[in-house]
View 1 (cartoon, rainbow, N blue to C red):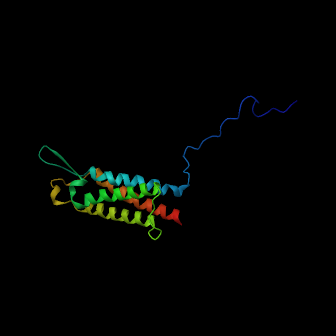
View 2 (view 1 turned 180 degrees about the vertical axis):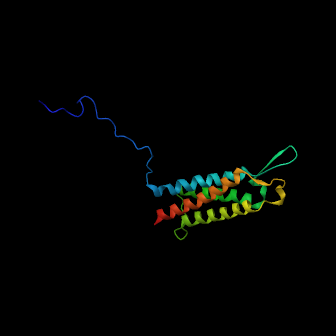
View 3 (view 1 turned 45 degrees about the vertical axis):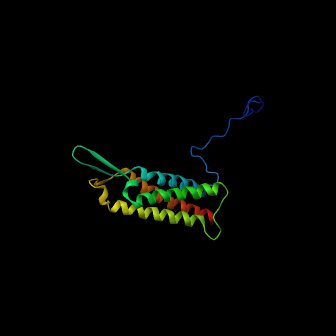
Length: 159
């Protein structure tokens, strides 16, 4: 009796099974750049979302972050700066070696977090009767923390 072959000679073997999770090309540490640009994009767009909500006599009020003063606009421009750093790096322009890119991203994330936390804690008088916080301010806070995480992951890449 002849031993049977695992596959008939006229058919190629089936392709190997793929993992459900996609593998990142540079491993887990390559996630730093992805987290940074995604968080920067969300941070840049978050001042255009509602940060405060309230209701008056028969009306619902929503105030976007851009209209909350200088801090709302600063959050927008910090997100824009994070995106600019990522785009410049992808186009081949890097910061000088004496200025680590991960520390710049960490500093921008910390500044954005402080700005958003100030707006979470104190509602500006100019937006009253909006007395509640909207979903946009929480998205801003998560995005600012995401920029910090992206900076930490990029710092781990550089080591």
